[in-house]
Amino acid sequence: MHYSQLDLILWAKNHGIAPEEIAPEIGLTPQQIYCVYDDIDQKRRTTAYLHAQPLLLKKASELKPFNIS
Figure 1: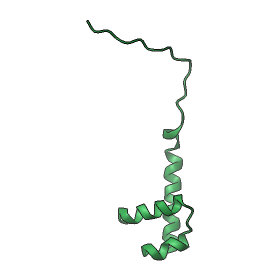
Figure 2: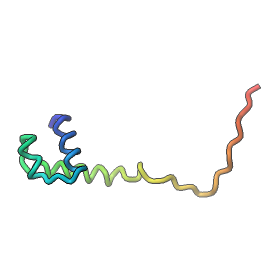
Figure 3: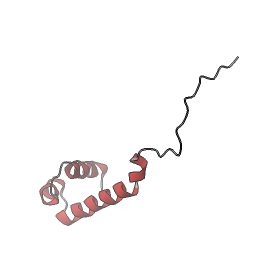
């Protein structure tokens, strides 16, 4: 599948467009679009930790500027 098709499918998914609507525009079947939607969901679940707030075990003190003389 070409990236231009994937971009359109991702845009459609992010905007809540049903696979049945986008499939004819891209030249794929609704089932193929559902598979891509599922793949996008799986990749988002797998990488969700990358978007999480950092977990600090204790409060970090402020860093002072390092003076090189």
